[in-house]
Length: 207
Image 1: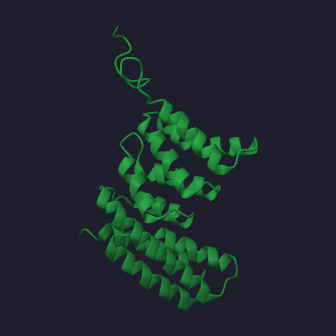
Image 2: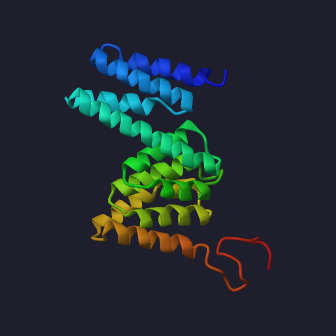
Image 3: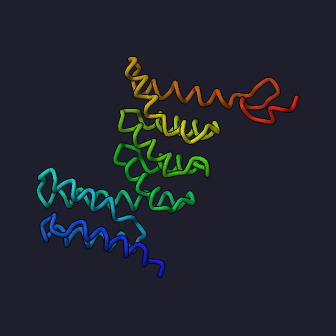
């Protein structure tokens, strides 16, 4: 019963392959989908990578190597996320995307541990992956995402980080410097005030 949702999802994923990829490749990917279902991993990224390779005209063996890489990424991400209490398929997919963009599993764990209800792990990891894809180094990516979450700012501010970094880059700032500047601004939001309270914290109606 626990596997039923995953197996149903795998069935839908199989249907996307029918008639669109060589039979031998479809069989190999289906076997990986079976393994993913047994491990509780999302299968959609495996199918997406398969169809991407076919669309680019890549050889079957290279496509299969790429799909297996995604499988191992999903497995590694799921393992580290489980340690942080995040087991949703959306978080696993987002973590796999972040890993493909250059983050390490340790980075994914740090971000997931910082995530909260107002800033879900899946959203934080998607933002982190996008920042990494823009050229922001790992350390600066993790620091910026974590600082923004800890600042207590709304999730919209977290989602807007890639756009803010791009704007700073357009103004001549390197990706690392742009991210570091935004992280400092987020940390300043938590800097202790005259009474020892963080900015924007405490009861504003209290004298």
